[in-house]
Image (cartoon, rainbow, N blue to C red; front, side, top):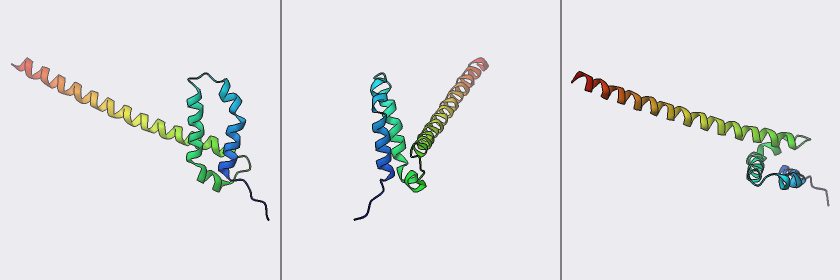
Length: 103
């Protein structure tokens, strides 16, 4: 029987296990954030496995960056929508005030 190479997902699991003590030392409020970072890395495990980098931590970190960039884009879009809604509301209010002054 031949040897099988570990998959990227196996390597990622091993990295997560090596960071267990660090996670345990984090404050409770930060532990779910830590877990989320590994979720982000798992989201891109297929692409990372195809990349087949000799250091599996680098694609994991890049995957985390990609997910955080997507979250930033979402937040920026939501902020823009809120700002537009506020501007629209202000225009409506100023239009109502103009009508009252004309009376």
